[in-house]
Amino acid sequence: MKILFIGNSHTYMNDMPALFREMAENASKEECHVFMLAYSGRSLKWHIGEEYFSERFNILHGGYDYCVIQEQAHPLPPEEDTVECAGRIIDLCKKAGTVPVLFETWAEKAKPENQTEMNRRYRALAEKTGALLAPVGEVWSAVAADLKDAANADLYFRDGEHASPLGDYLTATVLTKTITGRLPERSFLKAFDFTVPERFQPVKENVSDETVSVPPQIAETIRRRAEAQN
Image (cartoon, rainbow, N blue to C red):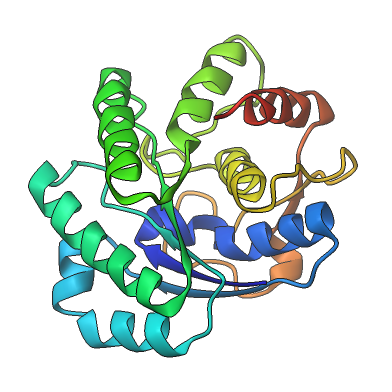
């Protein structure tokens, strides 16, 4: 299984595609290879404009089974830009025989009311294009409500926008369920934290330094909500 991730920092935070790779292999028992075109603060309009030739080459010649597509989240771009630019990426995927997967993001911690519009846009785009939908934001909202009184269970990084290691564990879990149709084994309690305390850049250089454990009760809450996704 070969997968391309297109997005921005919500994709690359805490090396999420690498966590997904391990989780997908655990769930599917199939070898998985991941590749990434993700740049800080960039929208799909930027990707299909400034980065078009990289996108085109990778999709048409990369031999990918899936392409995970993540739009700018904070703030959301104009909906017509998302429809046009995601649509062009999805069209390239279809030409290449690659399954497009829409990575629905989450609202800012201080603006949870924005999640409803995010959900609407991503679901409408999936219906319009036939792409798979990974409802990360919807699962995120449900899990955040479930864990609101739990200690050390924040899905957000300290900026209230990006994902914490737990948030990226949730993201990888939903993507794994969407793409493989399965959840990882309950014993898979690994996540990555590539940040340095009180800083965002630089980040940890050694993978061994960024590996952290997810509390089983939190992982179980995420599993339950991911299992119920549709």
